[in-house]
Length: 163
Image 1 (cartoon, rainbow, N blue to C red):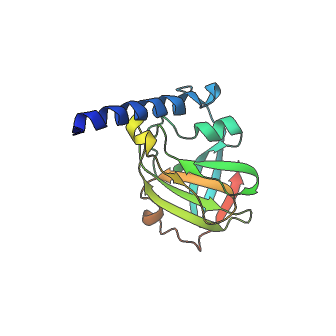
Image 2: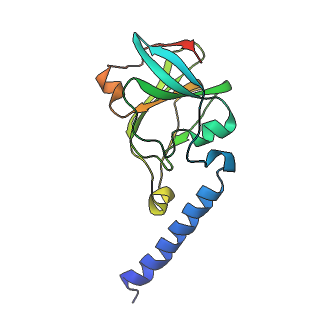
């Protein structure tokens, strides 16, 4: 008869190995504790936001990892070279996020609210990847609660002031 310990030990070992492999697969220039992102300003409807701009592969991989909670007037915008189906996950995040995907015209194509972080090796194994319903050119990450606080809906519109 197999005991609970005999089952849990291999599962924990596998989770640790997967977590370590996941962290090791992140490019080294994305792992740095302190990364300076270019800054810009956007609006969703009439709500201005100061954003960190992730417009290169290393900065998009790094994202908001290891950063502290953002105030509601700040976020990170991921900018891609062409519209596509881009997924995000919450590896090494310190707080929950709302995520909003936009097409090339600034129309919202997908909203994901209150996505929890994946901080530990065990959580990393089951860390969810969020995939939109359609092709996006921009993704905005903001502190969880932003979408509800400012009544962001699929009818809301992104305006880029400067990025």
